[in-house]
Amino acid sequence: MSADLVVLTRAKGLYVGLTVEGSVVAVRDSLNQAYYGRAVSPSGILVGGSAPAPPDAAPLVSAVEHLITVK
Image (cartoon, rainbow, N blue to C red):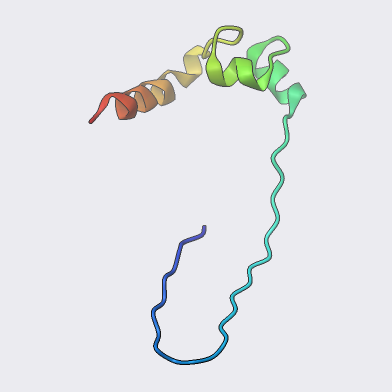
């Protein structure tokens, strides 16, 4: 979890904040193939077309569509 923090001070001097974190985003083709039953690309999953959402994803798709249409 991360959060932004804003500090206002009238003191003089040098203030330094440093955060060192690492993360990796990687495609796991074997898991995508196991779930969809065939090889699919990440763009095919995200954009649709070549990998339509499976029935198990219906609640998630419905929630996202609702958030997109709510103003």
